Image (cartoon, rainbow, N blue to C red; front, side, top):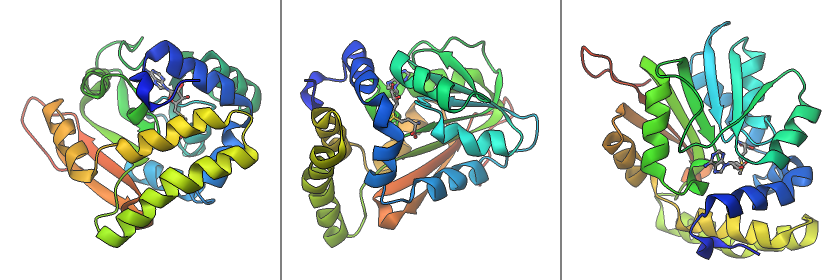
Length: 239
Ligand SMILES: C[S@@+](CC[C@H](N)C(=O)[O-])C[C@H]1O[C@@H](n2cnc3c(N)ncnc32)[C@H](O)[C@@H]1O
C-alpha cells in the first residue's frame, strides 16, 4: 500500500483516496477531533463570500469542504481527481457541482473564479508550487485564496505533542476505525513532513501570490493561509 515514500505519485494518491472514500468523512471528523466544521466555516469567513461569487474548492474530495461556500450562496465548484471521492460526494451532496480535475492542470479558464480554496489537499499534490501557480491562474486579479492545512505549532512543547498525535495517535485511530489503515498511515506521515506556517507563506509568495498571511487553529496544528492574486496596479493585503 502506498505511504509517504510514494513521492505523491498522482495515480497512487488518487487510488488511495478512492480506497478510503466511503468512510472518509467519518474518519475526518474523528481525526480532527470534531473541529473540522468550525475550521471550514472559518475558511468561508476569510473569503468574505457573497451570493453569486464563483468559488473553486480544489481537492474537494467528497465536498464536505465546499458546504459552507454553498451555504453562503456562492457558486461553488468542487474539483478533485479521485473518482471514488467524487462518486461519494455526488451521492452525498447532490446540490454541489463536482468536476473531475487535476490540481496540476486545472480544467478551467484563466481568471474565472472570484476566490479559490484548498482544504487538506495541498500537502498531497506532487508539485505544490505548480498547484499554487494553477490556482493563481484561475483566480481573477484581486481574488482571494484560502488554504486550510495541517501545520506545525510554534511552541516547542506543543510541536512535540502534535508529532506524537500524527505519528502515533492518528495511525492508531486508523487501525481501530478505518477500512484502510495504511492509507491513513500515509496521511499521518505526510502531515508530519509538511511545511510550517512560514515555509508555506514563502512558497505562496514564490508562486506569485501577494498579501500572504495566516491564522493558527488548534495552537498551530492547523492553519488557514490567505493570499491575494495581484492586480495590475500592485499588491494589497489579505484580511
Ligand atoms: C484529505 S482529502 C481533503 C478533501 C476535502 N477538501 C476535505 O477537506 O475534506 C484530499 C483530497 O485531495 C485530492 N487530491 C490530491 N491530489 C490532487 C490533485 N493533484 N488534483 C486534484 N485533487 C487532488 C484527493 O483526491 C483527496 O480527495
